[in-house]
Image (cartoon, rainbow, N blue to C red; front, side, top):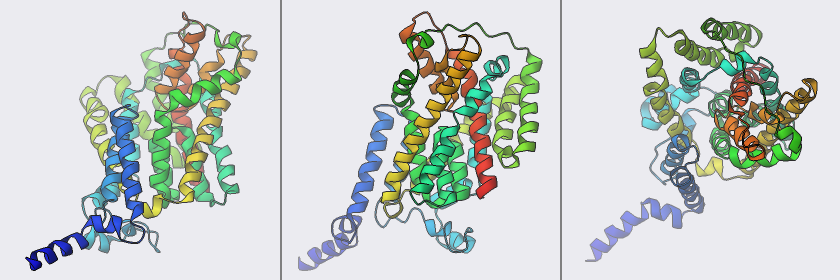
Length: 396
C-alpha cells in the first residue's frame, strides 16, 4: 500500500499541478490560464472577434499548461536572430511548424488576399478624397511610436507597438514579426481586443470632437463606378504603392490581387477559395500559433501593461485624427462632408464604418452614412499597410 501512495506522490510531483502550486513562479501559469479563459469567454459569450480571439485564447491556454512543451520560442528567438533549423528538426512540434508561417511572413499576406476578395473599393473610387481620411487615421501609429520611445522601448519595439493604432491585426503581426518578435503575443492580443472594442472606444471620441450640426449632415449619394474603374484600381494601386514603399508591396499587392479576382469576374472558383476555405485555414493557423507565443515568462511583465495602454492611445488618437480631418473637409466643402466618417479611417473593416453609421443615425434617423464611411474604411486598410512598409523600411 505504501508503494502505491509513493507512486501517486511521484506522479503528482512530476505533474503540471505541482508546477503551478509548488514550483517557483508557478502562479504565473495560473494567471495566464485565467487570462486565456477570459479571452475564450469574450469570444464565445460576447462574440468579440471570435474567429481570432477563440484560437488565440486556446493557444494561450495550451502553451501555459506546465510541462506540455507545445511551443519552443528559443527555436525562433535566439542569439543568431534566425530560425534554429537543427533544433526545430529535433525538438519542434506541431505549434512550432505552424508558427513558421508567422515567422516567415506568409500568413498575413494570405489573410490580405482573402480580405481583398471581400472588399468593395467602389466608395473609395467614387470619392478619392476618402484617402485623406484613411491617411489621417494612421497618425495614431506615429504618435504612439513617440510615446513608446519615451517609455524606454527601442525603435523596433516602438514601431511594432505603434502599428496597433492601425486597428489591423494581420498588419500588426506582420510588422512585429519583422521588428520585435518577442512582443508578438502582447501586441497581437492588444490589437485584436481593441478591434473588437471599436463600438465601445470610438463613439465617445466622435461625439466629443463634433457638434450636433456636424453629426446630422446628410451626404449626397455617391456616383456610380464602372467595372473598368474597379478593375484598373487594384492594378494601379499596386504599381503606385509598390514603387513608393517597396516594403508594403507584399501586403498591398496581395490585398489588390484578391480584389482583382473579385472584380474581374473570370476567376470565381479561386476567388471563393481565397475568401473562404484558404482564409479560414490561415486564420486558424495564424491565431493559434500567435496564442502559443504568449507564455507566462514573456507576457506577465510591466511591458505588456505599457503595450496595452499605448495600444489604446494609438487607436484613440487615430480615431481622433480621422474625425478632425473630417472636420477640415466639412469646412472646405461647405458642410457637405459629415466628419463622423473620418473615424472609419482606422482599418477595422467593416466595423468602424458601422460605428459611423450608428452614431450618425442616433442624431438623424434618416441619415445613412455606411457607404460613405466605407471609403475611408478601405482606405485605412491601404494606409495601415503603407505605414507598415514605412516602419519596416526605416527600422527593419
